[in-house]
Amino acid sequence: MSDLAGRTSLVTGATSGIGRAVAELLAQHGADVVIHGRDPRRGAEVVESISANGGAARFVAADLGDSRDVERLAREAGPVDILVNNAGIYEFASTLATTAESVDRHFAINARAPFQLVAALVPHMIEQNYGAIVNISSGAATTVMPAGAVYGASKAALDVFTHYWASEFGAHGIRVNAVASGPVRTLGTESMLAAAGDAMDNTTARGRIGDPAEIAAVVLFLVQSGSSYVNGAIVAANGGRRTALPS
Ligand code: NAP
Image (cartoon, rainbow, N blue to C red; front, side, top):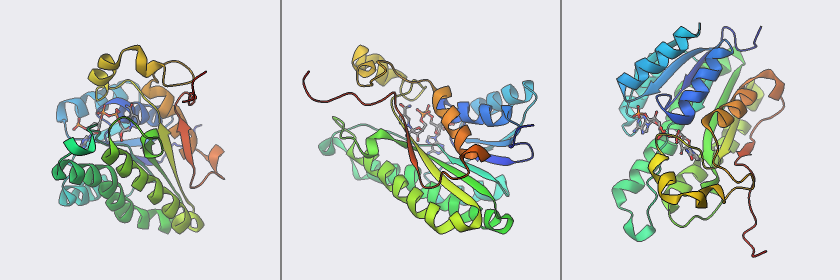
């Protein structure tokens, strides 16, 4: 039997892309999954797909840009054993084209919301001396891209949280890790990838864009007992970096 049987997990941004793949995989491995997102239609679709495969899921809608709504999400999710902070936005723009509102949105959704969820959900994990938290970060936190300084900075904040939380909660049976994803084909990146054509494939050593399932597989490893000594790690799942030097 999977070691996730009887575990409850909350996956934010599970109505699309990487979050959906994570939610479906955790459910396949026996976890009860709280599906979070904003779109109730896509939320219901994910719940149905998990139920059709014999899994257990329910949907909670919340706007992570609104701190009150994040608190409500934590309450409605109830006690969870596994938290996957996946929901995120990326409005790739140059610094001169980025508004103050966009800066606030990135930090609220990509960093403040995970912070609030951890603050609300960790006390139960401490009580039971068990918990697994995975933050979905990005190579953009550590690699300079043509645009998107604010996105990269918000993910760098999430990386720093990962290190602090791993240290603060490690002695309480809680492991906190991150997956630094490379480019992956999702609803959110569809138009960006179409515009980039082959150029994006060629940024990775594997010569191709990733699939959400390839990120979900790493998350699964990080929440299972096989990774019991992995804590505070930022695991790159990006197909490998290509040299930036001329060959
Ligand atoms: P996506 O397809 O655009 O899906 C984003 C998810 O986040 C959706 O479920 C969406 O919910 C939710 N979300 C967005 N804004 C929200 C808000 N204000 N409140 C609540 N939920 C919100 O994204 P993705 O490409 O799978 O990316 C998922 C994560 O991976 C993000 O953190 C992203 O930064 C990271 N990442 C992605 C890539 C990539 O190439 N795809 C690369 C590196 C890192 P609704 O649609 O229901 O509102």
